[in-house]
Image (cartoon, rainbow, N blue to C red; front, side):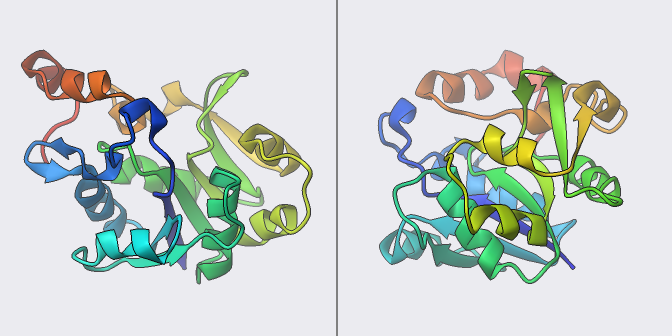
Length: 205
């Protein structure tokens, strides 16, 4: 079974505290677009929020399960811990919530490449990875997250047996690599909603 874990509990400091998952693109929220894309390639979708109160924000979205961090205040590592414990699938696609152009074909390809690895992680170069647009083996995540010293995602991915996929290899599925588009600032949101960006990047779904 394939699962997806979407981390929605960030503080969004670079977006002036606004909820990035409810940013709009082409008349739909980021989270709606993300969930629709994920439904094409996974059996279940788990949103990991800061607390039960935040989970209530997603009650209108069908086909998802929202859970809360168990170990709070430690960033993405805490979300991965809770999500991995809750997931039913042995393979988990992990995503941030600010990626409105996730490509189902790319996700499917990452799943297909897992073989005997513990993770399949896109890589732009040796110093620039995409740990929050990657597939992990649930058992490997839990093994690491049960006992670790660092809260760094890089420390986590370098501790497991990972296949690093050059992003250029994914251009056959996504020529503009728009699947990796993520929106951290309000200026980024304005950019993707501009006419010039729309004509060359993320198409409506």
